[in-house]
Length: 272
Image (cartoon, rainbow, N blue to C red; front, side, top):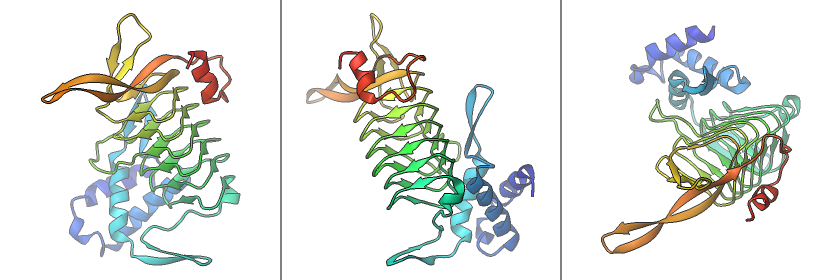
């Protein structure tokens, strides 16, 4: 079935929740959408006409998938799991390097050249070519990660299935995410940005660009080639003034810089 037809069928079935588990036609449509997610033929979010667009119908299909699937025992040697979603396989044929104990769920798309260190990739996620997902990093449901990205150890990339219109976390090409960063609530990291260790970004986190005479405040987005570190700012509460976490843009990574630049080199450029 063509993608446009699948979209129509998913939208038509969305408000018939009571029959999802028993209607074979609905189940077949949902399974076809998941197969397209698995191969990268459809995505939760696409870049169109200069902006990221959320495909709500794809998120609907993922939610419906949980209802039409049965619980099953999954055995991997001496290891056993009990879940509704199969584990991704055939990594050799897909050109993906997977180090034990990396786990990726069916319905995520992982491009050739990706390296998965012991990590976790959830359903609906998309990972572009030659990206590194380092040790104990987690890629949440529907998160979109570009090509040539380095997601360092212990990074937490949040997932979002609901609300349907909510943007997933999106990381564009050639981004470096430092160790233990937390990125949630649909934040957008634009191409070539470098995030220092322990940067925490949510939809409400204040981001200060301190490269001008006066700081410029933004939220929810890191502009292209920005170099970002964690910081804090004073905020008045009833009991006094306390420092609240924020993130600071301290400079720009030059387009001419080698894409394989290390975090230390980027920060050293700005005397940090």
